[in-house]
Image 1: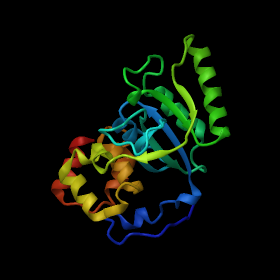
Image 2: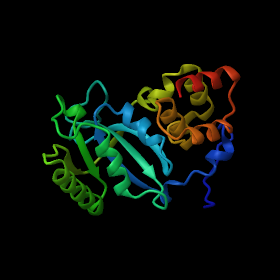
Image 3: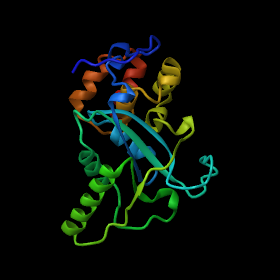
Image 4: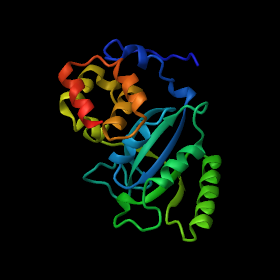
Length: 222
């Protein structure tokens, strides 16, 4: 495919991020599967995922924040290319990468699918029913419609990459406001957490303009 979106001249991987799909050509999926740092990295490493962000959803408390969450849940929201991934593919990742058979100790960390529309809700119901049949036990995951999504504070976004400050801080400074929505940053965030295909990691690294020290630090995390 040869699609493009407005580029950012401050991005260290300018040629790669100019190939990122614009939002009107992607679809969105939202999941709660415990602490949102891990899912953000896991989804970000998947080819076909365009953007990731973490936030709060599933409750009624106005203006939730990390220290005033109310009845909301930590969730990851992903934008994906429907020509490369189906919603069912994301449900597979969701249900195979967290504990869906136990009740979370806090609503903050509950297992929940927040469907964007009736089609997503129906797909989640089919997947849940099939999983219960195969596993022979009940799925505790809540299936709901997404009402609102509040983006979490910046220090929660791309947490794994930010945990490598010599690299994360540099990329955050170069990308500025585009840091969270960058496909390249999403991939790197997943790669430093140990996800993704090694050959894809190396291919991406070839296009990242970093110092030898920064590159070495990333390689150490892979």
